[in-house]
Amino acid sequence: MNLWGLIDPLLLLDVLFAVVLGILLFSRVNEPRTLWLLRGYLFLVSLAWFVQRFEKLPITSKLVDALVLACSLSLAILWQGELRRLMELLGTGRLAVLLGNPQKEFQATASTVAQLTDAAGRLSQSRRGALVVVDMGSDLRPEDFLYPGIPIDAQLSSELLLNLFASDTPLHDGAVLVKGNRIISAGVILPLSRQGISRYGTRHLAALGITERFDRCICVVVSEETGTLSLANQGRLERPITSSRLLDLLKDLSGGVAGLGNQKPSVGSTKSALKNNETLSSSRGSVFKSPKEPLQ
Image (cartoon, rainbow, N blue to C red):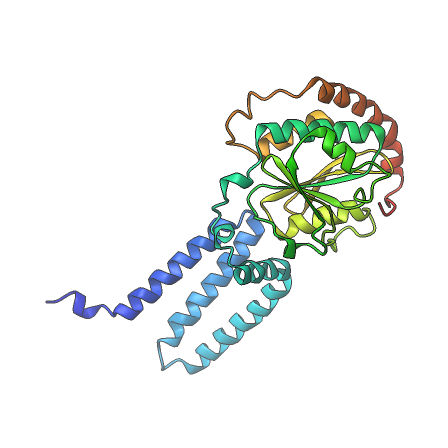
């Protein structure tokens, strides 16, 4: 008896492609609730495929198809941001981002973390508004922003960041894009998030907006009104934080980078962290008394 004669090659290929696609989807989902929704949707799709193979169940087949269609529309509404990002990545041919294989030159380094923490602490101390986007593998391109900014392409340093966010410079209102240990551009205008519009200012909404669309980038935000430090990651904002807390978060998000665990913050960063604690203590009253922060 020939076993291979009983197996339909097209059916085997169909199942193989479906399994690979399912594994790819599950590997890119981190939130439990999203994972549950995806499992339920894939179960319905599998059920519809199984029922359609039996021509003697036309009513059941129609009902399952209608249920799958209704769920597809619901998921399209719930995941409109993710689907938009998926189409953007497919349109630009960035398959490495979809497959979760970021290029190494875009990953944060120990020097990046130390310099960024030092600059953020000093900006917080002087209450100068700032927004720094760190690309950790999303391969951000000019078309991902509302305005790509002015090309800089310079070695990252805390002094250069301080100069870019000086209040008397034309680039201080935009964001600075960092890839690896280099500053790519400044004065970048980011897409705004729709969540927390009544709670956050423009800088915080921009940080949430870009991290909602790209999960392999983070944003460091310094409030111009209070000097409060914040960190945005995957559409979530942690605030207020100190310089030392920012250093710990950046280390965690940059896990696996060689030499990062042994990297120590500079003396300036340590002093900024201590002074920033005092600044936060004096400003927390203004931060939590008013739920609405002015546009920054």
